[in-house]
Image 1 (cartoon, rainbow, N blue to C red):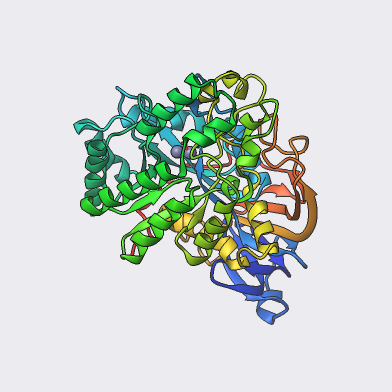
Image 2: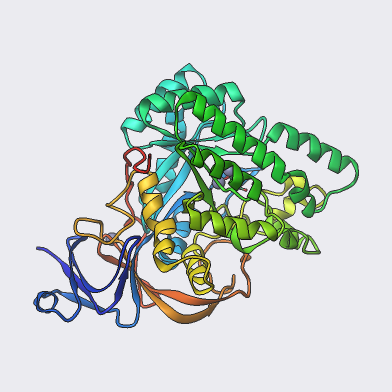
Length: 467
Ligand code: URP
Ligand code: ZN
Ligand code: ZN
Ligand code: ZN
């Protein structure tokens, strides 16, 4: 028995096109598009018709950077795969790529198995995994080949967090050389963690313990330096590079220079760097802790350079780095010592709306919105055109988006399992109305109609975005 849905009357927006078209969905996939009102579209029959008149019909968001249940600083990110993927769906995201973690002294396989166990049967939307490589050795390097073959095609390394996730330049070079051979993509947390730890120690010794010092010690120059070093190591290895959570304009300049040289170097930024700043980190009464993440928020003047990078394609992707910790009991672990504040911000539910606001504000075009939030992350991480577009054969991951609805972001109304919103009180134009995942209704006119376990693991091919 085939099941058919037709979405009528909307403006279909993809990374490449804007067309007034009806969309036919059959057995979980996009079957056809036809101009609205034409005989071809009118001839379609379906069990279910969704009216999108006056709305956008867009691909479901692809958030390529989340951390559900991440262990960090003696606690765990507060969203489980169940709560986090449900919140993602509310925000119009239908695929996440989360980071499985290798612990030092353990294999990649153990880490990956543990993340599969956390996610399986619990997700409202589809998911894939990157692998955090914390312990580069001969066994790990061999395992990277196996993981690429089974659909875990990207590996995060850290130039920060000595003693936890940190890799030195030699370990980084070895992993890059391996990925040059096996087709994997190295994702880099580019901050000079060794230098930062010295500055942290010195700041604490001076009695500088408030959250705002987190932003001061994690200097933009140390992000730029690490970005430069990662780029040149990748160049030596002959490997592509994807720099995660870029926040400093000096780091954008490094990426732009490398791209002008023709290198396969890519950059991701996140809504927090586009919409928030060190002003938030400086909020009194320890409120600044809500905005502690790494790389840190920067002074406001960096934002314009990030928007520019997104327009000029020196930055290609906006992901959330969703890594929520409650203010009560979690962020509070760092009262009296900013270095003990768990790093990370919630945002998986807010990304599509915030980027739509950027369209309204004139920072990016409608198609660029879809490109940086859906199509390019799908391509970058080997899921295109199954994910990230609306085209015959693609998974029917579709959002009906009301571009005129007004909303005020608040922890009172959000669905993430965290006791604050980083965007509390922000007024936004545009809102997700209905969400389909593989043709199934997950959000129906602002009601949750999905279920845990609908989302399935999505193995990925290698990067589809190389020069
Ligand atoms: O502060 C952050 N970004 N927390 C999550 C871990 C990471 O480095 O991405
Ligand atoms: Zn990171
Ligand atoms: Zn992250
Ligand atoms: Zn289902």
